Structures are given as C-alpha cells and as structure tokens.
Image 1 (cartoon, one colour):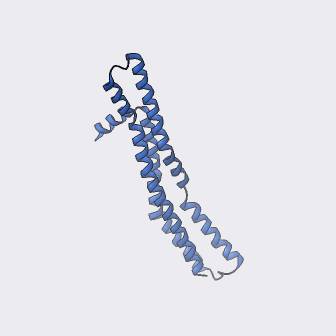
Image 2 (cartoon, rainbow, N blue to C red):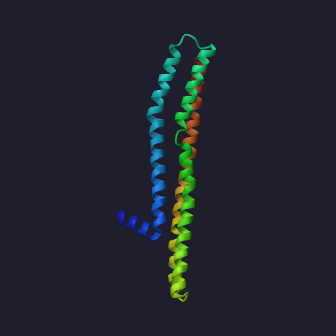
Image 3 (tube, rainbow, N blue to C red):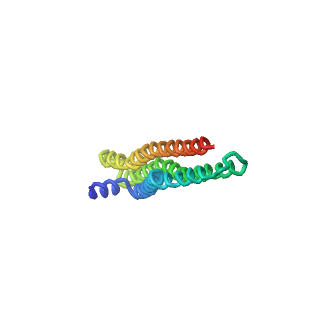
Length: 169
C-alpha cells in the first residue's frame, strides 16, 4: 500500500503532495467535527437544558436573553470549522488543475527539447499530468458530500436544541 501511494504521488508531481496535505487537514477537521457532534455537544446540550429546567422564570426578557445566548453559543460551536472545511474542499480541484498545468508544461518542455517524434512519450506524460486533476476532483467530491452532511446535522442539532429550550417555557 505504501509503495503504491509513493508511486502515485511521484507520478503526480510535487503539487500532488500539497493536495495530499490539504486533504489531510480537511479530514482531520471533519473527524474533529464528528467527535464534537457525538460527544462534546450532547454533554453541553444536557447542561443547557438542565440549567433551563432549574430556572423558575422562563418568560421574562432576561430569561429569553439567556436562552437566546445559549442558542447563539450552540450555533457558533456547531458551525466551527465548517467554513474552513468548505474552503479546503474548494481548493482541492484548483490544486489538481495546477498540478495538471505544471505537468503539461514539463511535457511540452520535453517535446521542445527532444522533438515531438515520440508520441508514446508525449501520451504517457499527458496521462501523468492529468493525475492531479483526478485526485483533486475525487477529494473535492468526497469533501463536498461530507461538508453537506455535517452542515445538515449541525442545523438539525441546533434546531432541536432551540425547540427543546422553547418547549420548556
């Protein structure tokens, strides 16, 4: 597996390593968000609901302000890193395209130096130059799906918290 990955990365050129770094950071943030949604947020939600239930006053302006503050805090916590993940996903196809352009430049450089009498050399160079675009597109597609799912789950959790806090009034 390691040999295959090293061979693939070598074929794609140095831009593919940058793409790999962007994908690694993106997935690290995705994993952090999943752990937050599974473990940290439910505990915080429970604390907010318990504090709200312990209050005698649920209808005053002050109580509603506290509740709205908790909802705002939940919104911030739930949506943390989502925009950064979205930016990293958007960068992936651009890095892939950059890798293809730099690969094509090297193919044309070889053609200029050795002549264009060897179509096999040119075809293999072009096929290697398109690897970064393929990798960037695959990473972007997977990232778009995961980002959309995370955003939907975050919106749903925020809505459920808001509904739970309002229903106990």
